[in-house]
Length: 425
Image (cartoon, rainbow, N blue to C red; front, top):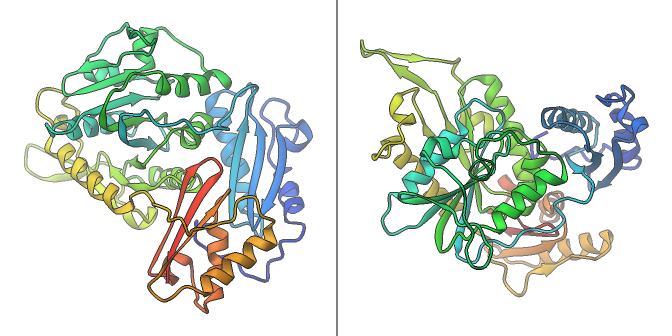
């Protein structure tokens, strides 16, 4: 179900957690063969205002298997009548995304680049985007290669380690011409490494925190492909200001990308839009050819298409000149960053954190009714307030999802336990 779809009021929420549990019994533990509840892989199921949160112990599963299990749990939960949204919280020993990482003091903006699967050109896009942003002589830009299983940024930029440390013990990023770069590939020196659970979390968070980025206008983060635990850890802990998704035009790729979009939205990360890679090519005869069946990507993902990249050597050229398509992408990203912007919260915002659920609903609807047309209502909550926004629609006699019912509607996650909602009547 889409993020802002409203579940019919006649679907009861009483016993919803138990109905979700019953549905999850159809998901098999890949190691033990029994259902995920019997095996203990699912550790907790909780429901809050039609939002289901499933705790899952993914310890010992390799990354692709963990992704498959996560997606199976999410699909099964969303198929339960009465469920509006479902999130999976992977558990690993002695690690987790309990605390958000403060952004490096000198870094203004962090942009994540992600893809639903490998092979769609995500690293090429992220690296070219960083180069294009750095082409502005007035801006300092860096790139953080967080793809632990395929750290290819050093290869694309022709960089070599080892990484040195400064006097404070922080890692010095490698100079890559107009930008600076850090990657686990610069530390491992192409040696094969097995990342799992706590190791993966620590590798991402510590390398991000312990790099001496200096003063940067923008830091581009190349995330691993998929929707697995490492990506979720990054979304919940790194201070990401906006995300760019990468997909090919193929319907399967677009469908998978929609799941990535849902994951980002569930974790309060603003989506800047999608880069459609390998759109087609022009042969020597001058005719244009499609590589994949065409798909209306913008309509399918409900996100703007930032750039269409052809299947062309110039897109993969990391020489002195930045491809014009990458410069076009950089302009589109800047525009979208300005559009989504951070939500500044005024002192008079309604703070519902820590209050009992009935009091939250009562206060939110009462104060929202008291706002004047054209006035913006701000609300702070300790979890996603999107379901509460649906109640605000009815509180003022409107209909439809909040994004359609109100002049302006936005939800942002600013910390693991701090969400802000802004609604303009």
